[in-house]
Amino acid sequence: MKKIVIRVIIALFIMFITMDNSMAMDKLNGVYYKNSNGVVLSEKEYQFVNQFYGSNYFETMTLEDYKWIQDLKIDQNEIEIKSSSNTNILPFGTSTTQNGRNIQIVKSCSGNCIIIVKCQWNSIPSVKSYDVMGARFVDTDLASDVITTRISSTSGTEYSSDLVRLTRGFGVSVKVPSGSNISVEQKYTVTKGGTIYATHQHAKQNITLATSKLYTITSSGYGRVFGFYGSALNVFDQMNGVDISL
Image (cartoon, rainbow, N blue to C red):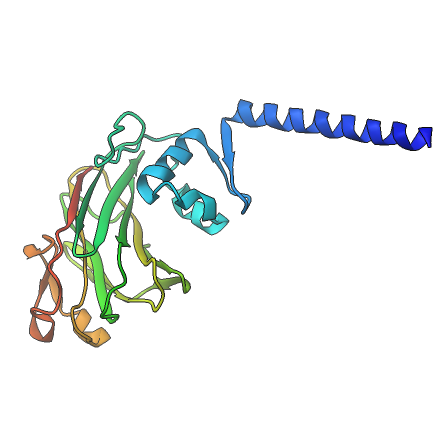
C-alpha cells in the first residue's frame, strides 16, 4: 500500500513539474492563449483576432482559421485596424457597416503586402444568389496570381474560384451559403505603394453566375470598384467599400 502511495506522489510531482515547465516555456515564447481546439495564440495574435473577428471568435477558432491569418505574420509585422479604438497594436485597416453587413480590410507589409478583406453578415440575407467581392488597384498590382476567397457559415467552409481578372482589379462571384453567420473573406498579395479599394456587392434578386460577372473595374462603380452592365445593372445593393494605402 505504501509503495502505491509513493508512486502516486511521484507521479503527481512529475506532472506538476511538467506543467510548470510548459507554462514557463509558454511565457518565454510569448504564448498566452489556447482554446479547446488546440489553437495557441500569442498576445498580439489574440488581440488581432478580437479586433478583426470579434471577442467570441477565438473560442471556436480552428487550426484552419489560424492558418488563414498566419500569412499576416502578426508577431513580426505591424497591423492596424483603424476602426478600433486601440491604434497602437495593429497596422492599417478601415471598416464600414451597411446593408446588414460589415466589411473590413487589413494589411501586413514586408517586401510585399498581404491583404485580407472580410465581409461579415449581421443578419441572414433573404436572397441567396450570387454576390460579388473584389478590389480595384491604384498604383499597385497583384504580386501573386493567388486570390483566395473563403465563405464561412454554420453550413461549413467553402472556397470560390469564379474569378474575373481585369486590368485594374478583379472580382470573385460568391454563391451565398444556406447557413447563418455568413462571412466572406479574400486574401491576396500586392506590391507596396498605391491604394486598394475593396467592396462586397449583394444581389437583391436571383441571378445566374454569368450575370454576376458582368462588370468593369471603375472608380465610379459600386463601392468604387464595380461598374455593372447588361442584365447585372441595378441588381446589386450598392454597398460602400473600404480602401487602404500601402
